[in-house]
Amino acid sequence: MSSKKLLLSERTTDRMAGFSDAIFAFAMTLLMLDIKVPDVPHGAAASELVSWIFAQAPMLYIYVLSFVVIGMFWMRHHSMFSLIRRHDSVLMWLNMAFLLVISLMPFPTAVLGEYGSVGVAVALYAGFMLAAGLLLNLIWMYATTNHRLVSADLDPKLIRRPTLRGMVISTIFALVILVALFVNPEWAIWGLLLVLFSGAVVK
Image (cartoon, rainbow, N blue to C red; front, side):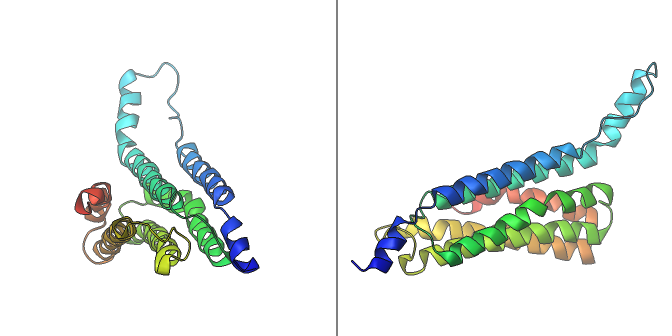
């Protein structure tokens, strides 16, 4: 075995996965920090607090949805890197680009929470999610092409399934962008829920 192949085989992905987990945890924590406690005067009627909670329901929906979707990206990332056996500089840079988008997700989430009725805000949010999905797919396609960074005997079904699911998710976000800009932003926001059922499309 050449020294180049030996070096490649020793480059496990443990540190990459650990670093990625930390970025995911940081981004998901920042999402929740943006939710503020209501400024209701002490002694005010309980109905005022209840009214505030109901008024915040759309924003809470956006933050919970973001948490769940980012969690789905984490699960896909975790699943992929459990099969990726080694890495090279290209994979590292692709992973860094993906993590950059994930770390920025609190920004479009906050914008959408504040301006949910504006098409550009919805499109910005879906655009970030689309970029994350495409980069994650690119990571997997790069790692599995010619079994570059995975085991040579990896089941082809295990290679195709993440790719197809990523394509379904990316298509949903692309459609959300179009609906937000050209049809109805509120419909687009609810359309984001389709991502949660993307796993049922690809078995």
